[in-house]
Length: 86
Image (cartoon, rainbow, N blue to C red; front, side, top):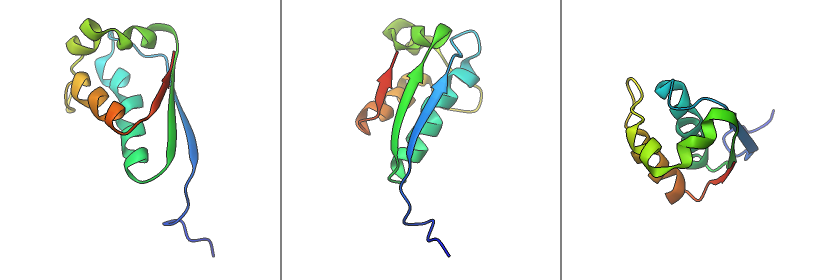
């Protein structure tokens, strides 16, 4: 039987959701953070509308329903050293 607690995966999280859907826009970062905090090698790939989230004024304005503002989540993503490709 495989020990899943010790398994480390390389994961690419992709998103095309931008500020027009703040909750979906934040999910790539929320999921990547959770995975990175558990030791996985995570990268984020943004395309389309999601690329605009890398602009500070846009990230500051995105507040998902039921989650912290994107600026806080994105700060944690950067603290964890997760690479973001646009």
